[in-house]
Length: 635
Image (tube, rainbow, N blue to C red; front, side, top):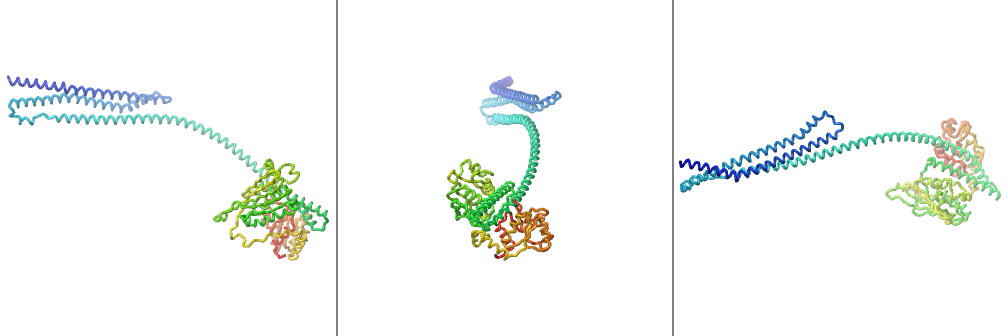
């Protein structure tokens, strides 16, 4: 009875202890577990609903943006929805499963732990009671059966580890969610950009098509303009050729009679004349010379305008050339009481490479212009060197400056504006008073620019003018420079002493001379000049007569006019060089006589086989020097 009562008592005590543990430990733990599980489940369900709504909205927006959405793609859209919701559903299922597992564990563990702890406490109490009842005799035997709480530590560690892993999983999931949202936003932005880009591309394609059409129209207009330009160029070439032919013809027709006029005037000056006759002859000579200068200016300007002006670059003595040019104006300057001076700075090189003829022409134009408009005072030609090449660059170009300074009438600003224009002078009154064509400065400007330089002027009314010209020339190397200074040009002799010297040429150099010239006046002029030089000549009216005459006799020298009837000078020269005038006359010296002065005449004559070139009107000194250059002899 007592044992049964004790067992009932122990059972009742165990239940009481179990209820106490359940009430004070297990129940709070269960409530906490329920709260945690409920919170987790609610959060995951809410997140799933938000994600599901976001996916649905995204798909709906994409469907709305589609133009002409067909009804038969509803199943496809539903499949896409399920596919995009599947990861979220799977994640929700995992989260709910975890929450259910936590709930089960949270409900089971407290009950089992409470029972286990109650059983252990009851056992320990029973053991303690037995020990106290036995007076401690069995205390040592009861020690191994004392309660150990290490199981709770392991459970806590397990729960902590589970919660930590859960937190890390939650953080990773949130990061993945943010990345997915960002990627989705980027995808939508890219889609919008592509949509806008498509619109821009379509607009650009339309613009490109319009531009292509416009380009085709522009090309058509350009081709039409090119064809018109070509036609204009052909017409310009024809007009230019016609102008060149006209100039050549007019040059020949004007120079031919002028050659006779000037030639006979020169011959007449050498005869015995009284003072009045000398005045008349000088007036005629001056007029003829002015007419020749006018023709030369017009031809030079025409050659420059047509681009046929060729530069003949060679080495010459600059200072000697300048002195010769200044000497040409001494008499005229002295007759007007004007001082004419030449000033050459020490830095100016003496020997240079350039076109001596064109440089001489520019300076003559400037000096003649200064002398024309100056009645008193002085005219000064100042030559300086603006730029000298460095010793390390011996092939460099030297820039020379020529200043022609006068004390003449001067010019105002309005007159200066028209100064270098063709066929213009200061004003009409100036033209009437001083004469001239107005081409000299225009030609000088073009020549200076052709030689890499420029020309300009400064002036004031009543205070004179200064004309500046800069020209680039080359410098000879030390090997090319002359070892000795060349003598200056000898003063010009009088006409009569010149005639006496010329008479010696024919005595020391007997020649058989033939002349082909169709103009009787020119024949007579050339006959008189040759006679004064000591030679006799046979005259023929065309090249055919000359070739026939030479085929029957030998000759030493032929003066050949270029433009003649029946056979011109070039054809006759070719016939002679081919042997039609006899083998002995193949190498006869032939000098071209022509009234043409256009660019290329000398080259054509030399290419045809001629040896020298004389332009009409012919001066006796030039005639003599040409003959002596072909037949050197001491006279």
